[in-house]
Length: 119
Image (tube, rainbow, N blue to C red; front, side, top):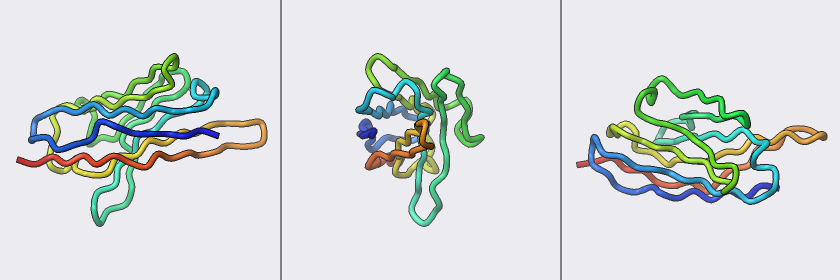
């Protein structure tokens, strides 16, 4: 079982920065692929950035060059550094863990943190 808690959201002006954190419980964090999703009002949830257990990363085209995902396995935490924020980045951001067990793959979700980009 993995329990995820996001933090770091808030209100920021266009062009500003925020750093989201997702703290995970459980001993298998280092074996999990960690993903940040976001969901804006009236829109479907979309993948923002992903980092594998081996620290390979990939990003949505809309955030490439502005967002950086990283992980600290010693602290069981994944981060999303968001720079050059735009109004269209406004959404609830969710942390997701994809964990492979011998019996199959499990998905875990955090409760989400609100990011609002507005002047």
